[in-house]
Image (tube, rainbow, N blue to C red; front, side, top):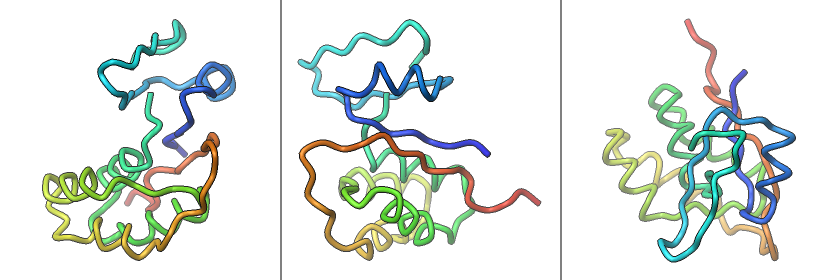
Length: 126
């Protein structure tokens, strides 16, 4: 099963060695410099991006299940509501993505996040 991996910037070198991702997505401030590791071609530390990609790769109606799994895997996850709202509109999810993150409740406060995996899709093909 494929998965989306998310990690803090400080843990990227180790995550690349452990996970060996095929692609990276980075959501950084334009002033923040982050060299791309030689081992990969695109770095996602954003739980909003992970949620969006998982919803995009799964069938409509699974948004709440994806958000629940995200909360289970990552107690500190707090997806950016504005990014999720834009994705919800683009994916035509009729507010279900926003409702799903609202239902997640408050996140656990942490100093720094940890590497985690979100399997995609949650549903089986066919």
